[in-house]
Amino acid sequence: MTIVLGAIADDFTGATDLANNLVRGGMRCVQVIGVPDSLPDLSDVDAVVVALKSRSCASEEAIADSVAALDWLRELGARQIFFKYCSTFDSTDQGNIGPVADALLDHLGAVQTIMVPAFPINGRTVYQGHLFVGDRLLNDSGMQHHPLTPMTDADLVRVLARQTPHTVGLINRAVLTQGPEATRQRLADLKADEVRHVICDSVDESDLETLAGATVDLPLVTGGSGLGQALPAQYRHKGWLADISKPGRLEPASGSALVLSGSCSRATLAQVDDFLTRSPEGGFAIDPLALSRDNTHWQDAHDFALSRIEQNAPVLIYASADPEKVKTAQAKLGVAKAGHLVEQALSQLAVSLVDKGVGRLLVAGGETSGAVVSALGITALRIGEQIDPGVPWTQAQLEGHAAPLSLALKSGNFGGVDFFTRAFEVLP
Ligand code: ADP
Image (cartoon, rainbow, N blue to C red):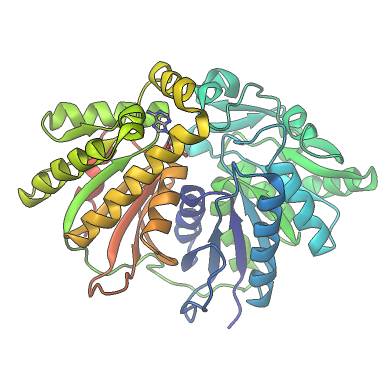
C-alpha cells in the first residue's frame, strides 16, 4: 500500500478542511490525530492528513512534531508532502509557518516551496502578496483580534520574512495568468536566485489550478485547503488515482446532537446568535472567570446540556464571546490560562456527554476541536461529505461504542450563519 499525498496540518480543523477538499477533488482520505502508534486501515485510502496542534506552540515543538509526521508519511510512500496552515496565515513573528517549512525542506533535501494560503470560495484571496478576507485586508478582518495569533499585517512576504532566515519571494497574478509552464519557469528563476519560500497570489480557482499544475512534482507544497482541492486533478492526470464515484461515503449517523463552541471568531459569533434566535432556551454561556473559581459552573453547563439532550432538544454550550469580554478574561487570568480553562471545560463536557448518548457532535474552533478530539481519545477520522466549504462530517470509532461518533470540526471563520442548525439536517 502506498498513498499519493501525505499532509501535515498545524491544527485539527485545518486538517479536516484540507481532507474535505481532497475528498471533493476525488481522493479517499483519512485524517489521523498526530502520528498514530498503530497503523490505521489505509487499504482504500489515497491521502492521509496528519493533524497536529502545532500552530501556537513553541516552534521547536512544532518542528519536532512536523518532522515526525513527515518521516511517517514517507514510510507510507507519499509521493508529495503538503504542509497545511490556515487560510488566514495564522502565525506570529516566532512562527510557526516559517520554521516548520524550513525544517520540512531540510529533511526532504529540497530547497524551495510555495506558500498558497488562498481559499477563494471562502473569501480568502491573495493579490500582490496581500491576504484578503472578503473585501478586507487581513489586518482589518477581525483576525487582528485573534486570541492566540493576532494578524496585524496583510503583506505575507513581510510576515513570512520575520519567521525565516531565508529569502522570501512572490509569484504574482501576472505570472499565473500565463499558465503553469510560465509559473514553473518563474519558480525556477526564483530558485536560481536562492528564493526558498515563494508566496503565491491566487484570487480564484483557476489560479490554484495553475499553481497545482506547476508544482505537482515539488516534494513539498504548503498552503491552505484551496490548493488541496486543485491537486487531485493533477494526480489523476498522472494516473496516480483510481476513479471513485463517492470518495466521502460514511456510515449512517446515530445518537443525540450537541454543539460545543470555543471559537471567538466573527463567523462563529454570528452562528451562536443565529442558534440562540432559533432556540432561545437552548444555549448555555461558559465564562472562563467562573470556571477558574470552582467546578460549579462546569457542572451547571453539564446538567443543562444533559437535560436538553434527554428532551432531544437542540443544545449549544459556548465560551464564544466578543473581543472585549475575551480581553477582560485574558487580563485577569492570562491568555493561556483563559484558553486552557475553556478548552478543558468543553472537552470534558464532550467526554461525559458522548458517554451519555451524544452521537452527533459539532465543535467550533480549531484549538477547541483539537482539545475535544484528544480528550475523546480519537486517533483517526474517516472524512465524509461537506457541510459548508471547509467543514465535512467525519466519523471516528470510539472504544467501547458500537456505532461510530459523527463529528463536525469547524474552524472559527467557516460555515454559513445557520451552520449550528443546518449541519444536523444534512447528516444522513
Ligand atoms: P478559532 O478557530 O475561532 O480560532 P480556537 O478554538 O482555535 O478558535 O481559538 C479560540 C481560543 O480562544 C481557544 O483557546 C479558546 O479556549 C479561547 N477562548 C474561547 N472563549 C474564550 C473567552 N471567553 N475568553 C478567553 N478565551 C477564550
